[in-house]
Image 1 (tube, one colour):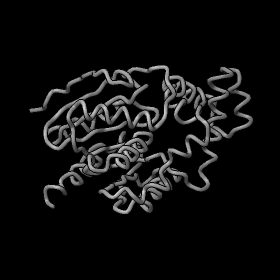
Image 2 (image 1 turned 135 degrees about the vertical axis):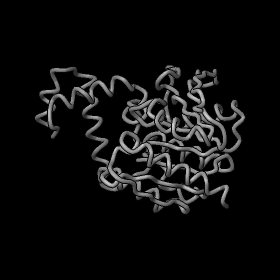
Image 3 (image 1 turned 180 degrees about the vertical axis):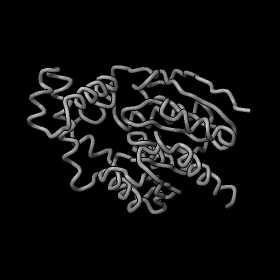
Image 4 (image 1 turned 120 degrees about the horizontal axis):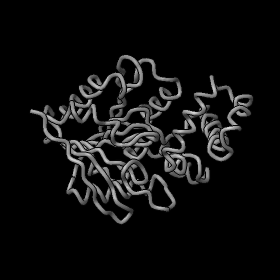
Length: 268
């Protein structure tokens, strides 16, 4: 019999946080990506709730969580996560993070190593990889045009940056407008601040089990980010799954990988 999904809210010093919760067993906290909210985890929560106690918060500034007018940073999101887990009396958890959520999960684990059983990461951000800086410059240019200058500028932008169609730009425009906190974290901070929160110099101290999940046909930049984590974190391993867009097309395979990863503790 399927366990009911519960929605809850809590007031923390940083703001009110919304989360989804279901299941019983080992505690797993799912942290969503840059252009998502906790709903992206619903297929996994459904598949894992029989054996795991699953928590999927909307990060501060995302989804149904509060969007306070503050200076957003990875450090702020980590502090908010720490307060949230403390309020729920979750002393040790597994963290599953996608994209921005992977960056926050790894940052939390580095600060609170004794509170994390293990990490599962999908396309994690947060490391500087040679040759990938251009994608951020392109993203900032995109934001300037599609958010700051309006629709007419989309046609001008098409002559400057190689995108397939204006329709794709319109989709990205809507994405940027829907997730303003992601824009603040990724595009609207000083480069020196962003670099200070990147993890390439710290991952050597991430001495706990880390599983990086990769789709066979993931883009090359995602594969390079994955590889950086695997090379820098001492106990990290890469597991390749079929297809790409793992959360959208392969929830069964992702759930099984997480289930097996969490199950190692019982066998050990």
